Length: 233
Image 1 (cartoon, one colour):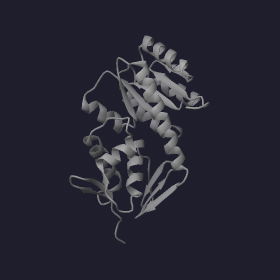
Image 2 (cartoon, one colour):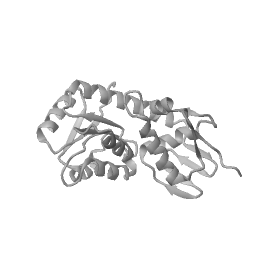
Image 3 (cartoon, rainbow, N blue to C red):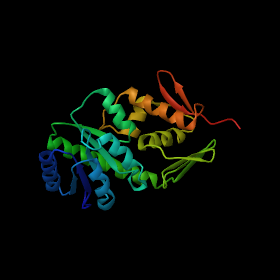
Image 4 (cartoon, rainbow, N blue to C red):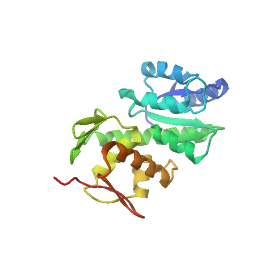
């Protein structure tokens, strides 16, 4: 990761896990802060400004899903990587997690070497995405405008603040020049090779997008994938 000192916020109500993660991450050169629950996370995060948040799902007071949703409402945290720590491996919990704006999952018990590798991959992918985002700041078509600097989607003059993955998915489809994006390509470009998600996750995000921007913009190509459809004037 070069000489850059990345900052990581570890949020978990189990102190022994937090201390173990903090020790292993600091050994790799990361700057680490810790929080014991979601409420504490929301107080510390704006001051610490982490590059990545390791967020436990099952916590008292405010769970990880709620905390993730609240973090994504803060403009400065639209692009911060959020990775859940969870002992829950059911498919539905992953879908809820990605809907709330999470980037990835790590299941407990956490294996430090696996976690370090995943964090490095997520940070590297985020660097590449930020570099590409600097090239195009505004995407506009058929009454929809995407502002990548302000992280705002405007539909017929109405502003929408989308969860991170919905924003990235819409941005991808709108830059396709009418071409169909296959499911594998969507997974690779929006979620990355390192993250294992299923087709159902894409479908959930497409459904959420349609609820917010309208049904007519995104067309399903059965057995293949999705494409952005320009509105007839």
